[in-house]
Length: 127
Image (cartoon, rainbow, N blue to C red):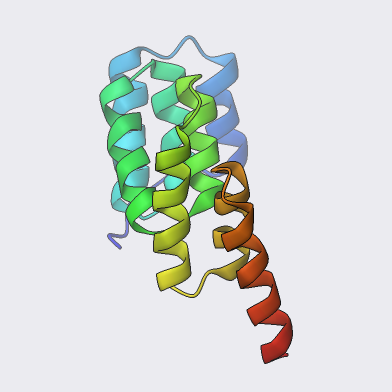
């Protein structure tokens, strides 16, 4: 993760919600947050700028990372729903990465209750 000089929380809120910040500037901040590995913040800036390309890039990245929370955040920013296939794909990735809670949630959203139940049982047996 690159170290960059990013705004603190108050400044971030001001840039996003109080100032009339241009889309170009918002995208530049989103890029800086991406470089710093702060995905949630990048989503916020890209969303405010209506930067669909940046949000789609994050969407694919968080599927690869098995990060269901950031995936949902990205879907909300894009104002779209994921297909069952996409939920199952992120569920498989989360399972492979041993992110069991994320995997369960994704499989449930993907209509794959048997897989979600199987993971729950395996996690309980391992405790």
